Image (cartoon, rainbow, N blue to C red; front, side, top):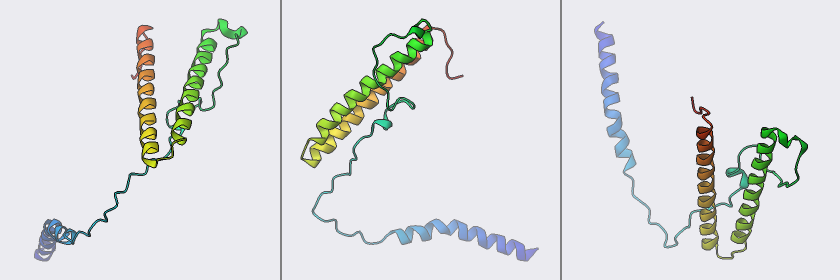
Length: 141
């Protein structure tokens, strides 16, 4: 019994001292950084980052459909047109960014495009929730 208590006590002491040993290893000399400033790598945004799933390749259509008498068919066409217009806008802005020759400007343009698209997604989500609320549809149970 005394032997198991001794082992348990030594394990507890080792666990208690473990952070002390870890801190001693972390204090290594810091190497001098080079004078060059490295810009963070900003990758080209992809449409799939912002688009609702299933509408990545939506095409705009203005034709009236015989099934428009059903509200869900008309609502689906409106939704497809919305995402098609958003994609067109996104691709136009992206082509403007890609035309830039300065990498810093291009990175800033990509960042701004991401900010704009995130803002549009936030607005879209808010409008959808507001519409559901107005129609007294319970969401997020």
